[in-house]
Amino acid sequence: MYMNTDEINEDLAVMQLSDSFFPTGLYATSNGLEFLFSNNEIKGLEDIKNMIKVNIEQQIGPSDCIALSHAFTNAEKKDFKEIIQADEIAFIMKPIKEIRKASVNSGIQLIKCVSEFVKDDDIFNEYQKAIKEKKVHGIFPVAFAICCNALQIRKEKSLTMLLYGFTVSVIGAALRLGLIQHLEGQKIIHEIKPIIIQTLKENSSKSLYDMWQFAPQFDIIQMSHEKMDSKMFIT
Image (cartoon, rainbow, N blue to C red; front, side):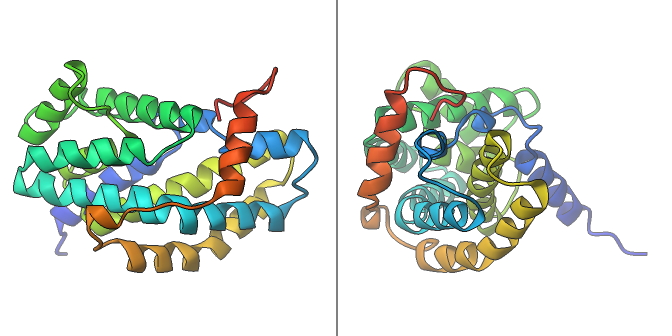
């Protein structure tokens, strides 16, 4: 029986980075869901699904996906100057302090974890060194691109993992807040799949200068979450 070991190795790397067991800190984010819950402004499955949809289509897709794609392509080319530029623009594109800080912390933690078992990738090592020297921020979508490239995960799968990871982090927060049950969470994931696919089609090949995001209602929600006196989640 023929086995494509390269493909199996890639699949295992995808599973490892996509697993909620992987310690990036994303489990501690709710992306404003906690504030909506505390103010009784979100009721259940449909509201959560709509929140994920808006975030993917209006924020993560046209900003983080493009940053990841650009960083990944230039990691393959070993063009570190372009990676620095992607890191800087992705950082600037996050206007909410708490969200920006959470993305940087998760990105740095991701690099730290992967450095435990990736030792021989030049771009990864250079990016890690640049974080330590404060030449880059370590913003999550760029850090994720660097790690996926080092682990020989294809760009298309890396982008899919980014959007899937966001979806699961919001659903995980909703479960812990008691908004939905586990089976409802799986239903949301299934119904979000076409939105993820369409978002990838629209943003996977765009230039870094095509990055944008526009979801002012969620910007306000995220800023309001930052001012909460008592909270379970970072964002």
